[in-house]
Picture 1 (tube, rainbow, N blue to C red):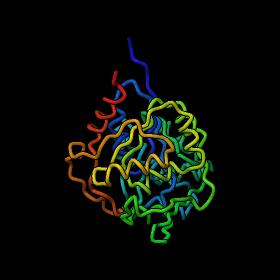
Picture 2 (spheres, rainbow, N blue to C red):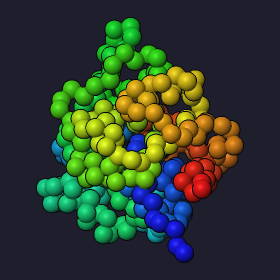
Picture 3 (cartoon, rainbow, N blue to C red):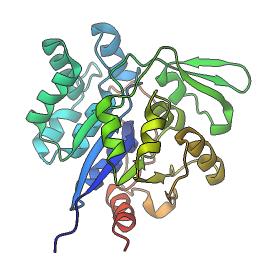
Length: 284
C-alpha cells in the first residue's frame, strides 16, 4: 500500500533554502511548499527592487532554481550577466512589471518553469528589515544585516520598519503541514525575517506539523541557537539536524563573477540533507 503523501513546508531564504530544496525534490511521497523570505535588498535583487519598484525576487528565484527538474531552465535561471544581474531575477521582475501583480507573475513563472513544489512568498508587503544591537547600534536593510557577521547574541531586537503581514497562502501551507523545516542560513538575514512576519507565529501554533531545524555548518553554540529560534517560533523544535561535518558539501564553491555580495562558501550537501530529513519523516 502506498504511503500517505506528506506536506513539507520549508522556511528560509537564499542559499540555505536552495541547498535544502535541491535535495528534497528527490524524495518521493512528499508535497513541497517553499516559503521564501521577502526582505532581500542586496545585490541584483536590491538594484531591481529599487529601480523598478518590484518585489524582491532573489530568494524566490533560488527556490525555482532548486525545484526545477529541467536542466536548461536551471541554467537559464542562474546565469548572471556581465552587469551582475541574474537572468532569473530579470525574468521574474519583468513578469511583475508586465502583469502589475507579483502573485500573477509567480503563477506564470510556475507554468513556465514547472518546479516540483509550490513557491510562496512569506509576505506580499514591502518588507524593510532592521535590527537593534545590544550595544545600541541600529543596522537597517537585510543585506547590511547579513554581511555584518553578527552573532545571535549581538542582536537585542529584530523588526520591520513597516507593517508586514503573512501571505494567506503561506498561512494555509503552514497550518496544513506535516513537517515545517527551518532551513540553514543567516539567522537574522534569512531565517528570523520570516518568523517575525505578523501572523506567522499564530499560524505555526495552529499547525500540527512537527518542526525540524537545520543548524548552520559554521555556526553558533547549539543551545544559543535553539533558545533564540524557539523564542521566535513561539514553540519547541521537535527535531534538530546539527551542523556536523558529514553534511558539508565537498564541492569547491567558486564565487560567481559579477556578484557584488559577500557570500559564504561553506555549503550543505543537498543529498545528505535530504537523507537526514527523509529519516525523520519516515520514522515509524
